[in-house]
Length: 404
Image: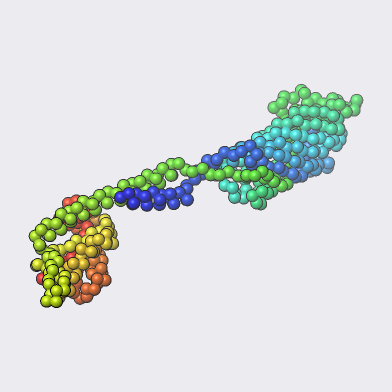
C-alpha cells in the first residue's frame, strides 16, 4: 500500500510538468522589467482656434512633418505609462490668410491600455496589440516663446517582429489653448484679436488642434520582457483531487486483496489439515540414498485467479503459483483442466459480464499453456456475472480445476 501511494504521488509530481495556467493572471515583475523605448516620425495637420472656414485636411501647408521619441514601462499586461516627446511644425490658419508656420515641441505623459491583453488574455507572441491611450503634457511654441497645457488621445497599434522589436503605427489627436499658435500676439492692427477666450472649453473653437499619424520602431529593453503565467489554482486542485480519489480507489482495492488473501490462506490451512492436496514424504532406497517425492492424496482442490474490475489481466502472479500444483498433478495423472470465468454482477450488464468472464477464462488458459499444458487439454467456460461471494471483488475471478 505504501509503495503504491509513493508511485501515485510520484506520478502526480511528474504531471506537474504540465501545470495549467490562468489565462488572465501573470506574475508581477521588477522595477526595470518591461521597459520600452520608441523612435519614429509623424505627420500632423493643424487647425487654429480662430479658423472659421472648412478644415480641409490636405490644404496647402496644413500637413507638416515631425519626429517623436518615447520611453515607457508596462506595469501589467494591460496597463502602462509612457513619456513621449514630439517635435512639431504647425501652420496657423484663419480667415485672414495669415498662414504662419511655427515650431513647437510637446512632451506628455500617456496612460496606455492594452485592450488585446485585457480582453483576450496575455499572449507574448500575439502579432497585433490594440492600445488606446489618454495623456496630458506641456506644449511650447518656440517661435513665439509660449507655453500651454496640452491634452492627448490616440490609438497605438503594436506589431510584433521579435521578442525585442515591435513596429508601431499610431493615430492621435492633441489640443491646447487657442493662443498657442501665437495669433493674438502677432496679429496685424487691422486684424481683430483672437477671440478664442469667448468660447467655452467644450467648443472646438476654444482649442488649437493637431491630428496626426506616426510610424516607427519600439525596442523592449531590460533583462526581462513579458510576464510569466501563474498556475490555475482551481484546475490544479481539481487535478489533485482526482489523483487523490484515484489513489483512494487503489488503496481500497488493496484492502480487498488483503481480505481475499487472508481468506485464501485460511482455506489453504484447512486443506493442509485435511491432507486434501498431499505433501512431501521421504523414501529410503537400498543404497541409503534419500529421494523426495510428492504424493497426492486425492484430487487437488480448485484454485482461483483474481482480476480487477472490468479487467481480464491477472492481478497477482502469486495466484498462478498456486495453479502450478494443479498443472503438475494434471500432467502426472494425464488429466485435463477446466477454467471457469466469472464476473461481478454488481457492475456491468449481462452482455458485458458474459464477455468479460470468457476473456478471464481465456487469459488463465493462456497462462496454463505457458506452463506446458496442451491447449487441447484445457476447457474454458464463462458463467457471466455472479454474486456467489462477499465482498463483490471475490466474484471477479477464474477458477482452475482438474477434470474428472
